[in-house]
Every structure is written in structure tokens, then in C-alpha cells.
Length: 138
Image (cartoon, rainbow, N blue to C red; front, side, top):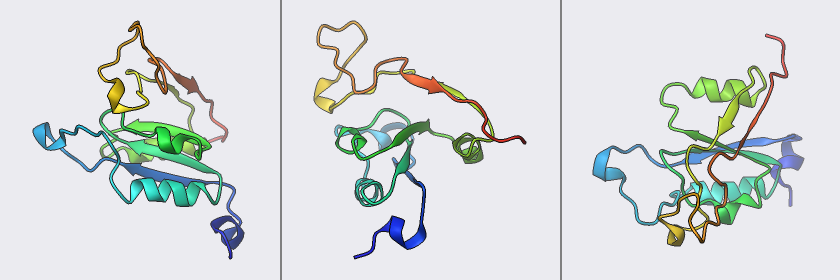
């Protein structure tokens, strides 16, 4: 059986998943999960080739079950019509600094969770992130 990487000699795949667009109460969710085909796409692609997963959401969502299969994760939040900006930093045209403005929980059972809480056990803590530098000369 051939895999994605053997068919096309990919170095990496970029997997973009997230929440459907919403406004006001239409976005209310008690589970804060990514709907299908997002989870199965992460598992299928990241299980076959190294992957960078881009999460498009307006808030932290449940991703702990998939983090171990990802090689990199980008929280792009809601870029609107500026998806090109996300692509620019992914492909090394520009550097960026990204720090989480919110704690990213492990499970919804932990919510509400705030920095300083006695049982603070975040998947990614408030302020987590990194800085990159351009890899290309534009």
C-alpha cells in the first residue's frame, strides 16, 4: 500500500482545519470541537507525512487528541480575507511573532481556566508561542 509521502515525495503537508464561520449565538458550543472532516484529515495526512496544521478558529478548540501527530501547529485565529498573510509566514517570506492571548485548554472539562488557578494545567499556556525570521529574500 502506498502512502501520501511515497506517492508524491512530499517533505511536508499543510493541513488547514477549523470551525465553520459563525456570529453571535450561532457559534455557541459546549464541546468546542472541530467538525469533520477536520479531525480525520489531521489523522490521515499527519499519519502519512510530516505536517504543519493550521487551525482557523475564533477561540481555543479541542486539539489535544491530534497534537502528537502534528509536527507544527499554527493558531491562525480568524484571518478573514488575509489568508495570504498566513501563507507568507508559513513559506518563510516574512518572519512573525506569535504569542497566545489566551490559555489553550486540554479538555473542555477544565473550563473555565485562568492563569494562576490552583489546577492550571494548560495544553499551551497563556503567552506560549515563538518568533520566526524570514528564510527567503524577497
